[in-house]
Length: 286
Image 1: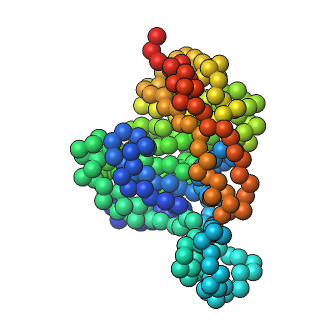
Image 2: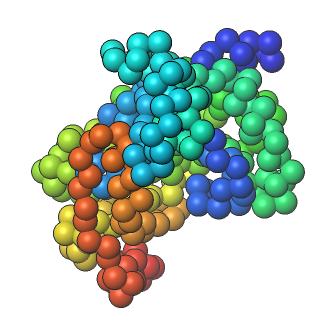
Image 3: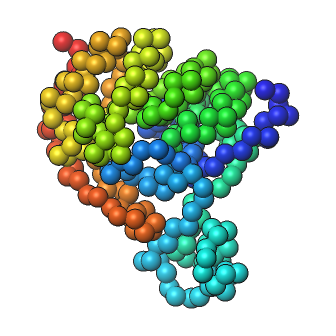
């Protein structure tokens, strides 16, 4: 891709996080794309589900000043998600989540952190939502990073056609691969989809000897059993093995976001530290 072509492709992003330590090795820039084809009941980024921009309303911040109403051409009827009310709100009670970025705009943000990548072994991580649902945009971003010598990671749940993943293989240094549950029925109950495609794609990545970090959200009452972890461990071993397995304990940071979006929040129990250690031990070398 020529440098002049970088601005042509556009995608929808809801956040760009600088100085991240939790999205791969080193210090990273995390780019969060909107759109997800799973509906995990414990999701902490519910604003990522819908690919188009959407308004969020934080009622606790609203003072009733009426400036949002004055800015709205439709007087808050038949909302077109233009975001004018959010621009007018002085208290961030109304927020427009997500906007269109060009590839060059995103790369400009990523380049700001290049000095940190060099001494920390970091780079750019593309996440979501599900970043692979915007494949052409993602491909162009990965190409741009490669041209600049920036290491790349793709954070995915893997619920996409293999040909989408296959196209970005040469441009991706590391996959952060989410494994929610091993049981197909449990997976479907809590995410809205079974996991056959997800596990099939993961197996192909592992057999190709790609760098893969497995990330498992530990949800109380769903997948927080030694038996469930052993099933995942055995699958990974039979498929060639992953470089790393991370357990991510459930938290309820999605509660306020669900309220702001007007959607239901589903609470789960937080796993105890002793339970997390027990589950992590399943993946320890024997």
